[in-house]
Structure formats: structure tokens, C-alpha cells
Amino acid sequence: QVQLVESGGGLVQAGGSLRLSCAASGIFVSMNGGGWYRQAPGKQRELVATITSRDSTNYADSVTGRFTISRDNAKNTVYLQMNSLKPEDTAVYSCHLFPNTIFGEQAYWGQGTQVTVSS
View 1 (cartoon, rainbow, N blue to C red):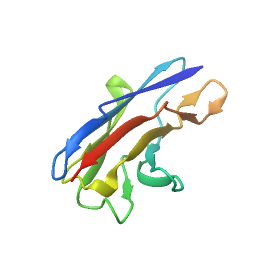
View 2 (view 1 turned 30 degrees about the horizontal axis):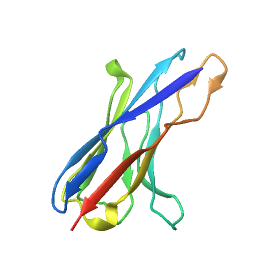
View 3 (view 1 turned 135 degrees about the vertical axis):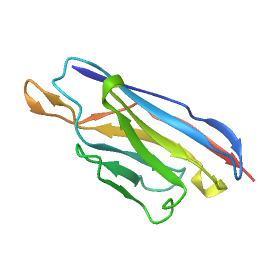
View 4 (view 1 turned 90 degrees about the vertical axis):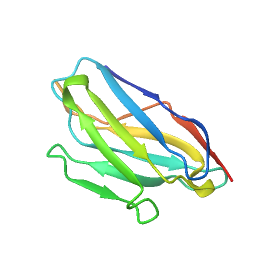
């Protein structure tokens, strides 16, 4: 079983920065790809950023140039650096990773962390 623990959310003023972390623990062979999603009240969950096992990244148009996804395999952690935050970035952010386990690649979700950007 693999657990994902997120941290780094909070309240920040517009223009500020936050860094989210998603740390994987438990029994797995290796880290793989994954991404960050967000869901604002009354809206559908949307993909924010992804990173592959070879560190290829992709971003939603709304965050391109402001957010950066990265990983530290030694710490089994994926990060989302968020700069120039806007009130419309307010949402619950969740990580979604696909570690390689003894049963093959499996998908896991973090518990979610609230990001609130005040104007």
C-alpha cells in the first residue's frame, strides 16, 4: 500500500507564492509519473500540471509560466511551485501519482490541501 501526504497549502495574498509537496510512503518499487489537480467550489476538477518518469512536464494554460512541477526521487516527493498566485487559483489541490509497485503501476491520490488566494 502507498500513502500520499500533501503539505504546503494555506492562505496567501494575490501575487504571492506557495510550494506544495506530495510525499509518497509505503511499499513500492519506484516513483513514476504523476500530477497535480485542483477543484474549486462548484467547479469540476481540473488538471494543473503533470510530470513523467523522464521529467517531461505539461501545464494547464491557466498556470503556464507561473507554476512549476518537479520531483525529488530520493525523497519520493513531487512538488508544485506556485508563483504569481491569483484569486482564481483558489481551490483544493490534490496530487495523483502512479508509483511502480510489485503489482505493477498503480494510481494513488493525496488527501488534498486547500490553497486560498486573497485579492
